[in-house]
Amino acid sequence: MQSIISLEFTIAGVDIENKEELFEAFKSTKLKGNGLGLVLSRQIAEAHGGSVNLSPSQKKCFEIKLLA
View 1 (cartoon, helix red, strand yellow):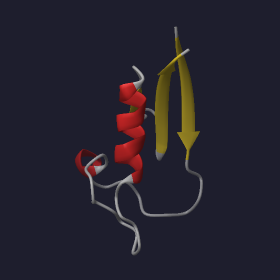
View 2: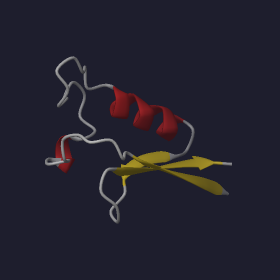
View 3: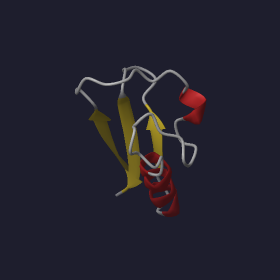
View 4: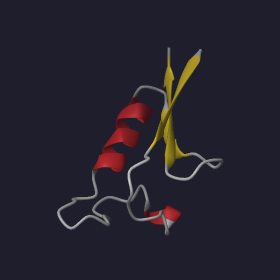
């Protein structure tokens, strides 16, 4: 059985322009960002049989699927 957690970022910020680079290491739009947050989140989820993806239906929303 999989559980789905959806996280929506409602704070003002930069729109997601290049979705292909979203999960690439060391790519960040933040001045002091290191670009590892989403990469590590996805790797951890995948190591446990889950996934992290950008939601196709909502802007700035990520779906985290984990085995329950």
